[in-house]
Amino acid sequence: MPASPLSARIQLVQGDITRQPVSAIVNAANSSLLGGGGVDGAIHRAGGPKILEECRFLRERKYPFGLPSGQAVATTGGNLPAAFVIHTAGPVWHGGNQHEAEELAACYQSCLRIATARKFESVAFPGISTGIYGYPKPAAAAVAVREVRQWLAAHEWPQTVVFVVFDDENRRLYEQELAR
Image (tube, rainbow, N blue to C red; front, side, top):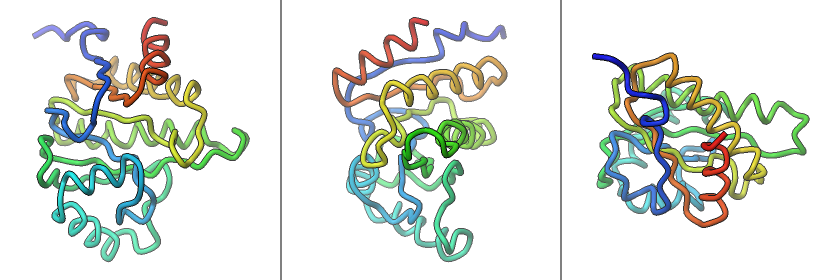
């Protein structure tokens, strides 16, 4: 079966990532994996206690000092429409001269590596590190689109990647990047 054109494999949705009917959603988590604000808090609230239970287990057994920036790990989706959550800890913005772009790219690569290994049909991404971590939204959208395009050009899985944005500003930024 021939591969779908790359543009057909990337979607942009404005809405709530916790309501996306995909195989997995990505959580822009903090390194503690124990919930927080923003997307992280919304996912934990909507997904219920099973996600936190698995995150606690991962902290105890695999990441006693927290999930390093750029890495990712999967848990159940709990009560979410998505069966899985891929948690990734993005970089905190320090002006752009402390390898933030490389770390952000690694977040996307790590999540997509999990999605490929598990043959997830579809994955939804929020804007990683653009909330309290302060990563400039235009630069983050550019990294996100670049990394997803490169991955999909070289891999069959996931079949579809959905960028989920919450507001008009981010929708416009992603539309601009996707049009390039």
